[in-house]
Length: 133
Image 1 (tube, rainbow, N blue to C red):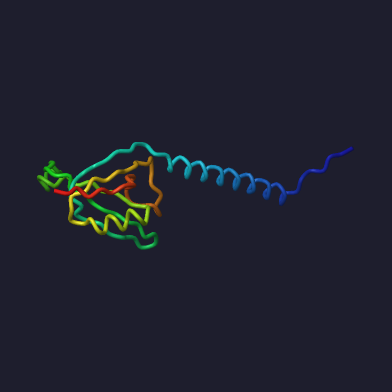
Image 2 (cartoon, rainbow, N blue to C red):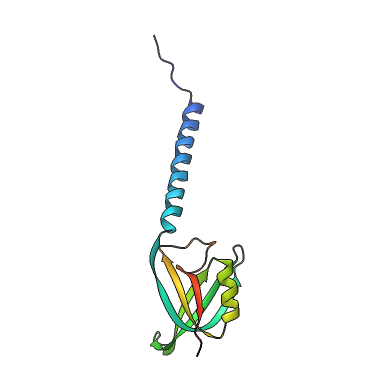
């Protein structure tokens, strides 16, 4: 009995199928690990900016002025203590739009890495509380 050797075409097809399976598994693993919450907490300050931005992927981004000053690089000197964040939840988006310019306490979750369609930062707001003065 002689064993037939697989054709070149079937070997190439088999190779690309294996590569495709590995790439799909690797992509799924990356998406899964990037959704892990690295840390969570709250930050308080004045909501100074909130907007939707992006060309291909529209994301919601904001800035919180936490008060005080910090030193920038040598050319800029002092700058405000700003914290940038992203938002995924539409209900949180509505709350933040109403709270712009007010003092707020924001609950957040930090992820290892944000995908480009999620936002520019790794910090995602999950809760908004307006601080009444």
